[in-house]
Image 1 (spheres, rainbow, N blue to C red):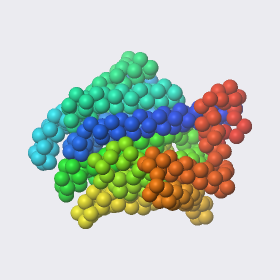
Image 2 (cartoon, rainbow, N blue to C red):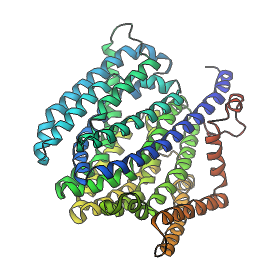
Image 3 (tube, rainbow, N blue to C red):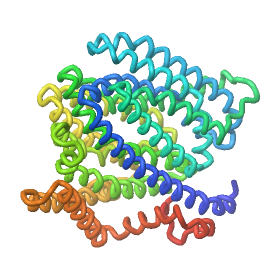
Image 4 (cartoon, helix red, strand yellow):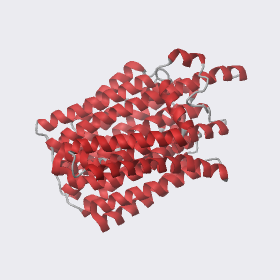
Length: 508
């Protein structure tokens, strides 16, 4: 590509990236509302034991899901213009991997059920294996959608998938299916998603299967898989460990708190990663630009996620008691503690995108493996010493230390510039959020003896939002402007086509 063409393409990439981020952020926020409401309904209908059983089965299911694609999807994404030549090979690899993983889960199902002493887990894993088989057909069309920057469709697909899954879970729960309510929707969700993806981006299956390309894809993909596998085990090891130290209902309280606190935040950060990865692949040869994009994206994500996490911690007690009553009181301190470690975990998704986009698969796998080893040790110590609350504390501390370290190591900046990046991403938004959360707790403490629960939630939330907005206006105007432009890119189409004067994603 000539320099003239590169300059002509740059505004388009910049605008498409900004618009893609805004689409998926809006979708993540909407999904968070849907999932919160659905968890409330499920909390009314089901019992802690049901949540506990679903979490224990989910430990195996989630790890198996991380293997789907085997990392060959990210390898295909990096092929760029040669992608059509790889589609047939990657398509059949995806189906083969999905089938193999499904069969392994089926074989392990009775063993896991015996290990935990609950036969219900075996059927739950059988439902999961069916979903894994179907998911093998989505690898190539999903990559094609991402490579085409078709994030409006992807945001709509994700939102529809969330609504469908949560609606089905509530329907099954009302029908008396108990813990099966979490797994029965999975095959239906995946089948619908695969069908819509095929309608949008049908794979090209002409040509011959290439063993040379398959070996190359599996070789590179195995390193991506190592990162995904470590991340998946990190995401589920707390359930797995707690299952050996506590009763099923205690696991249920922890699971309920985790789903309310962490799952929506992870959806938001993974949505951003889904946009950033194809954008960073295109600029991976320009290390300075990639560094700027990564630092700016991490900073904006920190200003979105950090206050949100501390807000849910500040209003957790009146909010949960308001909508669920005393039934789920034990989950309140767990949710509050987990919320403290989530911002660092979300922000580090940006650093992981940088490593994958630049092809540093071995380095990414090394960091993920070391983080996993530390996480498992922290979980065992936390669960053994303090049951569910001790485990939540260990998870939060590990998240803060491990993810801040990974972010610092990935950064190409050195010396004072690296410290400035850490201060902008981890220190300044945290201090602002802590001050705002402190104001919310002070207001709640002052009115608690005289006000109802709904007044406490509203007053605490308004205090948190108001103080944080004021602090951003005083000390974070640059980031506030960038966030405003980021979401403005969703609506201002004509201005975007002409090139934004000060784009939300300045580095892209």
